[in-house]
Length: 463
Image (cartoon, rainbow, N blue to C red):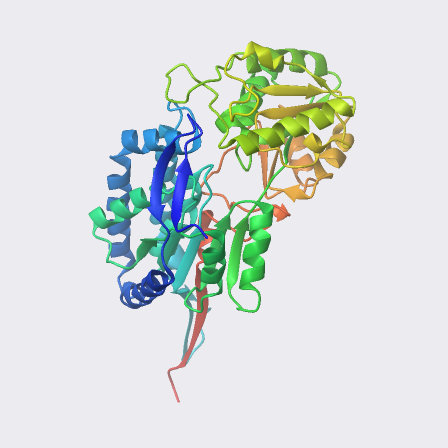
């Protein structure tokens, strides 16, 4: 078994980070520190927790340039876009901090003579957050900040691809004066992570990652009687209606497909277009997709960076080859992109036409810069095809008819339904999935319910 975490940068294949894995002894010590710190933290007024967490957000945001460059090196997103993740971290954190006093306040029962009755929200204890590499800050903040605001301690297990993200967050909390032991990053391999999920000191697990990873976490937690939150895979679909604002839809859907090299849980992976607008939509979509510049993410002109690793790019190439073998056609010649090379994580954007659901690219998560575009004749066919998936994270409709958008959204099995938007998390709305896209909820007021337990007080005041 390796004793060291090694991060290989997709930028140039170099070793970018090396860290020793946390030992079993140090894991046990971290758990005891977390328990001790949480016993005191739960007594700290919410207003004081707010001030500490806000200072941490400010300290984190002040390091935006350095954080952005590190992120580009670790996972390949172009440097022109990585500062956006720092801003998104701050946006979500501040929203969850702001609503905490109201959401964590006691809930009074209706008045009853001779009794005082209320429900109190109590922290769970120690929360384990397992973060992915594709949006390591944006996913981690969804659980870290509300968990701390609710009075919990947090242990963060970052992806081995983006370990520096955990150190950055820890440094921000230390600078803000968060008591020691309340936030601790641990560098763990898969086996050690499974053992940590099983540890009796862990009271809740928040996992963002692959469907197979979610199954592993669920198996490890079985029989422990703790709750877990799972944000897993997606095969998010968009439907373009005939009354669409075409230019707006093309611009936003191209971005929804290719941003982060398609490595977004809620990125668009399949598009269904009404026959009335199919031809102009496809023509404009292809033209815009061909304008991407594939290259080194540290270069200013790059708008499409490498995928996280060569194996990930190879999976996408296999999906494209499978589709072609089954009758699909490619709309973009990869040779137009000089950086595109077999055997590397650099992969050109692709559009597949003449697709159907016999093809892996329309049913399995590709998680890369490729999309299949399929023609449909009406809303009913679009709904049927959108629901023909084992995933259900988000979906979108592109139309000027809000009532139609609502009607269609009621029929599509997803956790978030968009009209004229995609690939975005609103911190005021519950972030959740259906089917194999996961369970549980982060963000919004509902997110606090998963990080606390209700405790009822029934006090008889007169005898």
